[in-house]
Image (tube, rainbow, N blue to C red):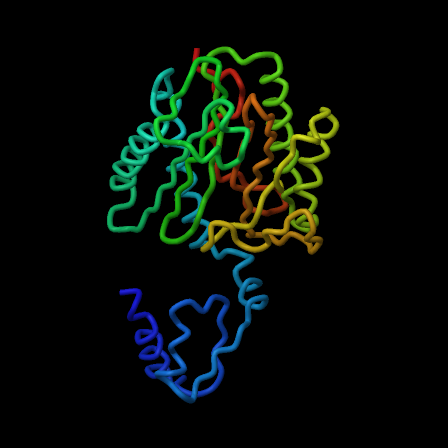
Length: 291
């Protein structure tokens, strides 16, 4: 149990001959009681060092990201099949989470899956996290729909977000969508070993600004991922160290037009000489329009 974590860590330290000296941590939480159980142990903050240790993923971790991405793609396909006018958003998300859970049981028995489904429809999606009034909200004809279908497999987080349209999008909706789609592609293309971390954000933002929508950007293009949903570096626009092979990032440019809605496409990418795409759900506006 969570209340017993400190005792568990103290026992492990004793077993490994580490019942005295300094032990580094990056998040202390319930482990703060360890020194009271082992008076000769001192906990030392090593936040930067331990974050750096998590930048590059090993092959086992990358395999988990790939499996989680494939399951989230399966979930996005189910979303396309289940969107319809009048459907309540929370009911839709709970239903889809249950469907994904059933599929996860078939694919990954005896593993640990966490599923996060969240849909925003119409003007409420003009805020990246909604208007705070989701209960009873429904999909309406003409709405743009921003959805999140994220999966964590054995602790490794993968993001997959799409924008759908309930009915043929207006010219304005189509222009905003295509700007975000092109920005997503540009950001992923910049996810190359040796490029600066900030280069992902710069590439995506340049596409949006060229399209004339720079004033509708409300957040960074992405962030690192791993054992945390938002793993460091989460300061993508201001981080200029070189990207390293095996890092994992979200690429999620978004535009938010008050009164109309949001437009966001989020893919998970692995850094390499040629970026590896983890998520593959369709991004073309024709597929993502429900007529």
